[in-house]
Image (cartoon, rainbow, N blue to C red; front, side, top):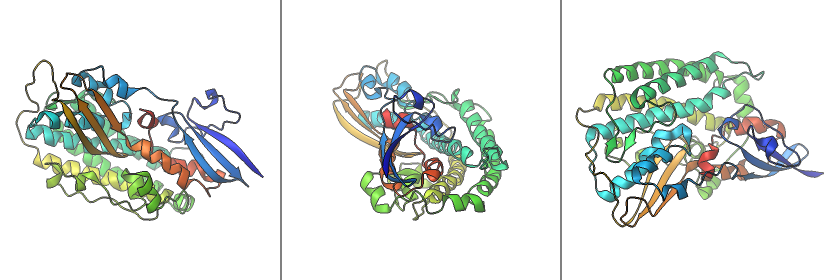
Length: 380
């Protein structure tokens, strides 16, 4: 017997007007937007899966066309709210490349440092729900993940004034320098996160029950990941050896030791292992940035209106969830003619069509919990 079940993920699922909706509850990615997952089920096993997106569409790319480049940065950090700083930076880099700006060295290193802090913070948000016991109760690992995330978010807030939408980047650098004593606070935070990571590991990849539930399910092959353009920890968990921090080195990453966290199993466990490994890697890279942070200005003096010359350019960066790209086309005006986003979640969510078939319905929360997407990043 074959039947179709539409599973709505998110608090708004019951409003989607479908015949049968199962709200998967507070498991991530439920907290990161509403989308529908149409499943063909036979004998309590998923035979086909189709993610249906578009419920969170905000038309960001059209809004960019009627705002100047400074205003564009205000919107650019909102499609993936967990990677706000990285999103701002990708747009700023596109404009700076078109105008030929030389950003001050201190701004370059601060940008890299804040990107790595943003990456660690985003990953910790996804990891925290995974540390809970099967009963839903908090564990020592949950407390550790929440403490680590809050510690990183605190220093991000000190540097930018914002907790989610940081608005720290400017065309030509940063809005302002970090406050006095901030670098010492960052070193304390990195030490705190490193000390809390063992507890997070013990509640996840080192816990026998967790490993048993996650191993061998939701497998995404290397070939499927490459065919769909899956990047970030999800792609690297399937053996896709791509990391722009190493492969498209900027002036700062060229001096850092970037070693991508790779796995080949491509299952739910491998994805969690990659995310955990990247938190540790980001704390290490952030420490190296602090050691190399030079003095000097953090921005350039700009005219009242920034105008990119006529032409087009494409820039990309390694955001927490994967490759984030910006294709900017300009007619020489103070607003972009076109500004197209390549967001990691848009490509990554398509992988559900490949990794969910063969999954038991009872294992769906486990598989989806290992698969990090932000729906605003899909619908942008």
